Image 1 (cartoon, rainbow, N blue to C red):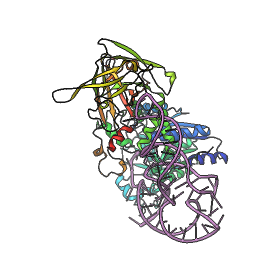
Image 2: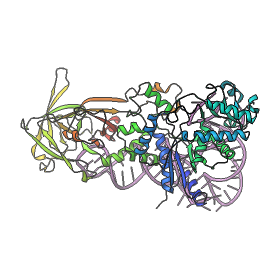
Image 3: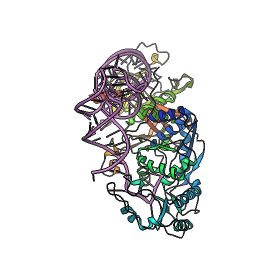
Image 4: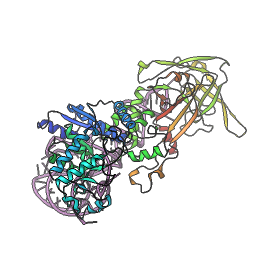
Length: 553
RNA sequence: UGUCUGAUGGUGUAACUGGCAACACGCCUGAUUUUGAUUCAGGAGAGUCCAGGUUCGAGCCCUGGUCGGGCAACCA
């Protein structure tokens, strides 16, 4: 019985609980509604909700909507759907914008304490006055504005007397601080913009640093968890809490997720959407929750992935193979087996009567016998995969070849008697004979074959579209490139097979069904499907040892 | 040049807080298999960034380096 080690945050929480610092914990997941959630958010969601679930506590979903120009209701709805789909329920649905009134009062408290002032400088002036990491900042004349005047001008800012950029409210902290964030940070700016929730009520909006910690405090968040790049903000976070004398929430930081062959930046993902490099936020190639869901990933497999990658403070680059392992592991247990031929060659069973057909039973999932079986029609003409025939077989190749035998899955053993080619020498048909006594389930032929291949009866075949996805980028570590990330897009990330042949039962599937197209991969029906034309997305391929063997030559 | 932060097999995460470096993915063998899938059995692979120090004993403690990442948006 080995106890698996706790991550550093679990350790902090356990200690806080043990010491009696808290009776129970409160966490929050605080997305800005300016885009859809991606896998990196999933890591944060699993962490925040997971902590509260494990140690008994609450988790709020809080929208950090302090910048009206980038935020939209569409994103709010998308985010809620994604969190729910991942399997988590929030205690409260909250918005930083709900606190705009309170935040405004906090600002007045600071002004009255002489800890905030209105600055009329331009953004360029403020930037230069800030100095550099090695050169202290310098004060502007406005820094010594009297309290009464600050109060008056700040109220005028709120009333809309000034234009965007004309004035800002700054906290009076320390212009010489080695931490740039402490050099009199801007806490309120003027934006005459429509907010997705507060409409035109406000024309001044708090900055992140003056909203986040305060929101945490208002909600009595005990553990406010964010990513590493916010470490320098922590000092300010604590400074506001101390000077406002509000609930002392604490900020902790962990390393964000990086995945090979993909990007995990909302800004860049938005660019792909806007530039039409992908069909939308839910394009199955996107590392977004919506995209992965459409592609066929299960929530369970994503949660498993988040659990496996762990939580730590060092930078990491996780092999996308681990994510694929997690889906395969789950899909193997739940998916219905189906036979689909994606790149066909016709097989004619010359000794099978013309016009005859029979239904052959086949298990839906040998991993789960409760799923039962379905019947598959068999007839004289079949499609098999081009790959499953080699005129000149490679070594260790045990599929179909001239004179060779294979078993058709759940059906008969066949032998390739003749290869029919067209004028240009391409194989058009394979003439085979079948062994009647080799029928699956009642095989008395005594023949043992190594190869088993999938097939579909030509007259019964259902035509479907199949979409094959590959990695979005060609470079393993997108953080290490120096030029535009779009230069590294994989031109072959989507391959559409508009005409694949499937066994007929595939038409009866439900939305939530997951399939394994035998020997090909895991698939999921796409919402683009129409009654006459079903579309399936490949979630992930099957592991393929033969491909490896082939490569070895 | 300042400051914050980190460093453990190829990757990621652990190591009862000082006691023989473990788990997962990946990789390699072999067995089973009516999916070259799954499953099962086994294996290779790090001596913990470097140099000192404390200690019977250091991945964990101390000192000094090296290297990586963050920080100077009226973004979050």
